[in-house]
Length: 98
Length: 272
Image (cartoon, rainbow over all chains, first blue to last red; front, side):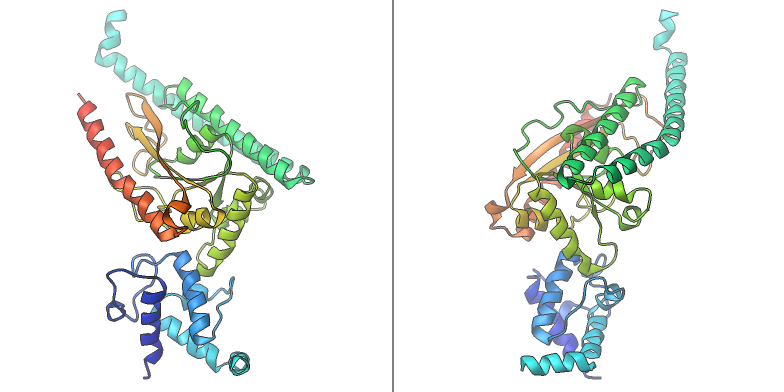
């Protein structure tokens, strides 16, 4: 399975959130990002959502009941980005941004 | 029987009286709380014309209720807390109060000491029909509750309340503290302070002997009477850390571990 999204996401998390003492390779793909896992908080989630929009052209919407699921781990975020990029609306917006 | 006042019999009688007073307090609270809720909700619905004034009034009413509660607990020697001049040297205008969270009386004591203030309330509680008009009217903010991206709304609303001049009260550990060390702090309060450009007031709360913690229930008031105290640890302005919420969090969080260790040591030394 192509895991380039996972690797890009790990790099993005470390760079965007300026995580000290954490390298992209240290992040476990299926491990929780929040709380007991990587220890991110809700403000980190906001910054990460902005970075994902800027990097992948995918926007996570507030009040989406699946946000918690999407932001659970690197793996779930990567799947969310794949799903969104495959949807016609996102593809059209990305093409428009060109 | 003056001589027996110092004997085991007097201590047992005093202990039973304190437990009896605790039961009476819970009974009174159970009867009075629904009326208080209805009254506060009614006022929240009636005072609709001027939201700012409504928030000020409802916050004052809440603080007055908490002051009454602490006077009651002090009178019955269940817990001693004097809200008068409990936090001297607070800054002018709006600010964010952060505190450790050892007991169930933390919000009531800080609110009683400030005489005003809003906080972030669990969404489940905020959405209850009986409470919402009051909580909304008093300027409290509903928590994000699981949606990581709802933090934006929480931050925006809290910044707006601070802009109106209301102080914000936050327990950045998110839940009750451990007895001997702080839990990791969340960043929301610090992000709010940075965006609103208001100072963060660090408050240390201690209760000795411990009462209304996770371990000590309302029906087990300690003997001697629990002493609840607030200590103003520091005031930090976000501009001192370049409005960086991570740096502000690190600066504030770094104070609590050593402060708790010092207080724990002082408590142990003071014990006979």
